[in-house]
Length: 373
Image (cartoon, rainbow, N blue to C red):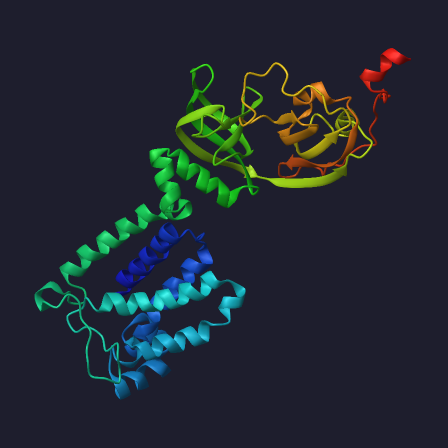
C-alpha cells in the first residue's frame, strides 16, 4: 500500500480504539502511531522511510527482500521491546507504536502479494483469499479504500473524544448511560444534566438543564430551581423520575474538603464559618442531644426519599446539604459527629477556608424539666 493509505489506516485504528476503549487521544500518540505505521517499509529503498534510512534499507532489501523480515511478527516483537520504555512514560504511547506498526502489516495483507508474517517460514498471509479481491499498490481499488479510510478518520475524530458509550449517550440521551458516565468522571469537572423528568409527587413534567452535585441510589442529585432533588428510577427513593437525560461537561472542578468535629457545637456555628457566597455542600452524620427533635416535620416524603438533611432517632444525616436546608436544626447541640464541608472551586478561584464561627447560647436544660424550675 502507499504511504497515505498506511497513515489513514493507522489513524482509523488509533481513533477507533479511543472510541471503543475510552482512552483520551492526543497529538503525540497519534503522531507515534503514524510514524510507526511507516517503519515496516524501511526494507524498500524507493519508499519514504527507505529513502530516509537508505543505509539500512538497501542492505535489508538485498538480503531479505520486501515484505519479509520487517513485515513479520519477529519485527513486531522487536519494535515492542524497543518501545517498552514508553510504557513508563504513558502506556498509551507504547500501544500507539505497537498498534501503528501492526496496522501496516494488517493492511498489507490486502495487497496482492500479502506479507510473510511468520517469517522465516515461507507461509504468506493474505486476506481475502480470492486474489481478485485484493489490491495492487497504487491501483484504483486502493484509492477507493483510501477515500473510505479518510472519511472514517474524519467521522471518528469527534467520537474518539467522547468514547462510544458517551457518544451513544449524547445521541440517545439515555439516563442510565449518563449515570455510568458520571461515576467515571465525578469530581473532575462541573457537570449539568439536560433532563426531562416527572415529579413523583405532583406528576409535573420538568424540563431543565440542572447542575449535578452528587449521586443517590443509582441516580443523581441535582439543583432544580435552587433546590436539591434526587433523580432516579425508584419512586420510593427519588423525587424525579427521568424520561431522558444527557450529561454535559463544564469547566474543570477542584473540590477542597475539610472535616469538622461537631462535638459540643451547633450547626449554626458551622454554617457561620462558611462563606455563603461560595458553592459548598455538607455531608456527614451528627448526633443531636434532643432525641425527640423535629423528625422530618411537615414533609410529605418518605424517609427513604432523598432529603439533603434528614433527622431520625436523634441522628441528623447530611447529604449535599446547605444552610437553607438546616433551619430546623441550626441551634440544636451536637453530642458527637463529624461533618465534611466540600468547597467547589472553578479554575483560578482562590482557596476557601473555614472562619472562626459563632453560635447562640444553647439552652441545655431539657424541655421536660423546665416546668420544675
